[in-house]
Amino acid sequence: MANIGADIGANLAEVRRRMAAAAEDAGRDPQAADLVAVSKVQPAEAVRAALAAGQRLFGENRVQEAKTKFPPLREDYPDLRLHLIGPLQTNKVKDALALFDVIETVDRPKLARALAQEGEKRDLHPDCFIQVNTGEEPQKAGVPPAEADAFIAECRGLGLRVAGLMCIPPVDEEPALHFALLREIALRNRDGAPLALSMGMSADYETAIRFGADLVRVGTGVFGPRPVKAAPA
Image (cartoon, rainbow, N blue to C red; front, top):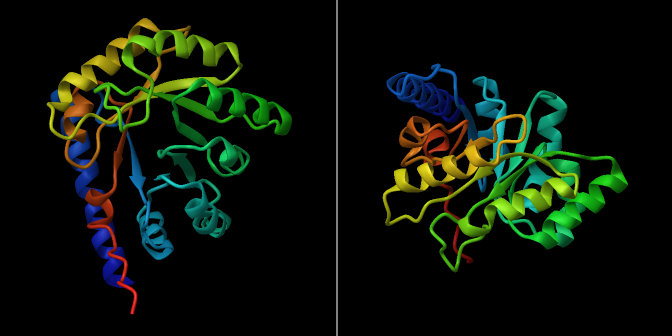
């Protein structure tokens, strides 16, 4: 555990250093972007090591995994904040509302309606990000860019707290083009306050910060390679 903690602490320090440098290069405040440490498939002890190193903001892809892992961690670190950064099925909305402070993957009307209805029923109103499929990839979740304005308006009309936009660029394309597109959509959909931008992962978070990212989602850069599941005996 000591080695795990030292490695994760060093990784966090390096990621934060690079984030600050990228922000300064872009003429932004060095603390302009927040780090979401992506802890999917990481064991609880790795998350605990990150918490001990001062990290408080985490991202999980699966509701069930977060439901198992995070309640005990919250007991020890009540200021921990958890973002859902993976696809959300409507039958998991109740659990998601109870677990997550921010839902970054609102991507279709049916899900938006379920979040609004269940949130009203339970008086739980997390910040929501609209996921935009900037590359219009058929296998990837997210609203197409041409439909983003209407969907943002629809979500606001349902009473969701639309706090920002999120994207995952295609792996084989220049990410800067997608970050610029997401920023453009955010700028034209301001409604009294800027929409935050969640964009950039381990391979491209510095570019994302230069294009105005407010949140970057970094997994391997913080925790190292994902654990490999052992093959069945």
